[in-house]
Length: 433
RNA sequence: GGAGGGGUUCCCGAGUGGCCAAAGGGAUCAGACUGUAAAUCUGACGCGUAAGCUUCGGUGGUUCGAAUCCACCCCCCUCCA
Image (cartoon, rainbow, N blue to C red; front, side):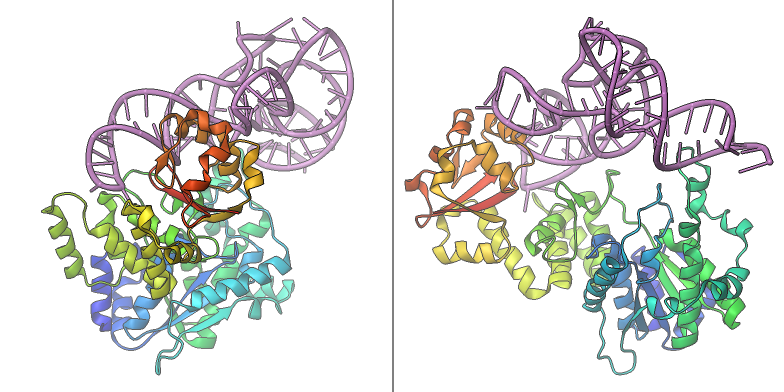
């Protein structure tokens, strides 16, 4: 895609929330290959789908001929970004952050192309230039350019300053200076002229634009992507089991795929525009086709396929689809022994049990221990509604105290497997020996 | 350092000696209806099959009985110095 068309496409996808220096930026991007960056702080050992929009944004820019830099916040991660956070956060140790930073680095790397001939991507860590900086230099060279009067006007910290019951430490208050310095440093080192980020980053980005002008005398730009919202007002990116992570160890490709499959109709086309690389015209066609179709729309499936493939590759997508096909087609008895083994490899939640374990305790204990249910109450509730099935047979209330009967030897698939379903969507594979 | 206001179950938030496992709302889960939607209705929602057990910042104390009273401590906020 040509640079001139890029902004147009992003606008149409509603991926641009704010632009710093709009006309000049459009001209700037249209007139050459530019270098841009986006920062990711190691606040955990994996990124989650909330990071996906800016991450894919880097990719979109690279596809349009620009050079993306992914910045891992080894230094900023040690401070903690206060932007729109309701409370002061606790600090992690240096070792932990270094470990996380390495993991984030690997993760970020899969979305951008390091082999492109003219605009190969780079990954940098702001610890490289922050670690060596002493407090005096920082205060004199960087701090001097910031007005506290201006900083406390920022929306991102207003809540912390004004709201009763919270506060902000000097440490977190200084975060903006560090991120601003990153921008000016990348501008100096790599000729970086554009920073992108989530809408919560606006204050930090404009801070960096000002600082770069003052320190380097250079004009640089900023772009923020919108916060992903859902039509029902609930928070995007959470499920019962918590955050949806990009790391396959934390959120399996199957769970990831299912997350997107469960997108509400009201959101699915917007999400396709946000998260998929399909041309807008194609997305419009999909929407039109779904509107005139009876029953289940295609949008969710296509969205799930696109995003799962982006994050977990074709292998991950195939695994997710294999499980989905097996579980939701209804007939688990049709699975071959190989299929069952494959499902387990593909990331279907599973656990091992011994016959002896089933002789005592309760079913709710078994299901809770394996993580299928959150509590025994949940299991009891489900039992009372015939919402627990083992290899397709619904259990009832009386079965709770007799787990051995629930996993009858003659009912096992291939002598040892039991596919337990709790509710309509949650499955767990037990191997009993 | 001084004065005042706070810390309640995932979140918000009521509760000021027994009727409190703690109102209400949100989130979440399950059922019905469906399309593995939405909306709506129903149920669950500290842990436990149950008896019962463990909670209201922490530690002690008063009391037959404490989230509620007292002492000390920790943390947060506001104002003053």
